[in-house]
Amino acid sequence: MLETNLKVLGEVIVQQIADYNYKEGISAWLSQDYATAYELFKESAKTHPIAQYHMGCMLYCGQGTSKDYLRAVTLFEKAATQVPQAIYALSKIYLYGSVGVVRDKQKALKWLNIIATEDQEYAAVLRDTVEQTLNHDQILKAQRASKEWIKENPSWNQWIILTTTESDDTLMLE
Image (cartoon, rainbow, N blue to C red; front, side):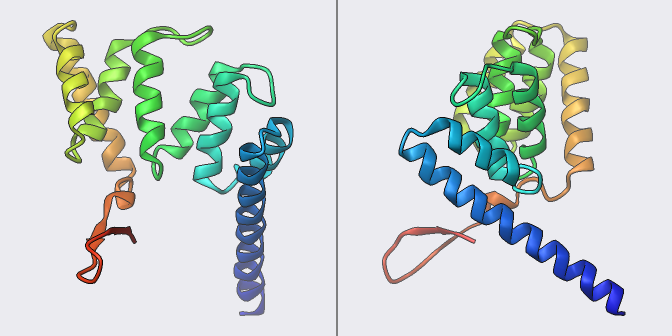
């Protein structure tokens, strides 16, 4: 029992440190201190999906570090389960390709299929455009890959849950 409690406490502390490093990283990034932001995101990206996304962006753009498209893709894939922008980033990277990342419209379609399931109009339009450039088998393979990813990540779209408040008619994320 004590061992279990210590493990849970350790996990809570690790997450609190990741949250702190993420917040400090955002502050550094907003101050355009990209090298500091990158180092802080690197620490928090071990457990913090939004930090993974931001670190991926920095690696992709070369902010605070050298460009590394492959590592950016890896971080976007980790973050995709909780950060919708990571899904868009993956679709665009595969759609257009990058140094070290081969252009793969089928993989782009996989990610566009996923995000389009949540009524994301831009993704649906882009998905339809990409489908026009692929053959039937490629489209089916992308659809299967999308379904498999969703099956493996059943809570991937929890970020989409919105509620409205009667008092001020604003949308709040839960």
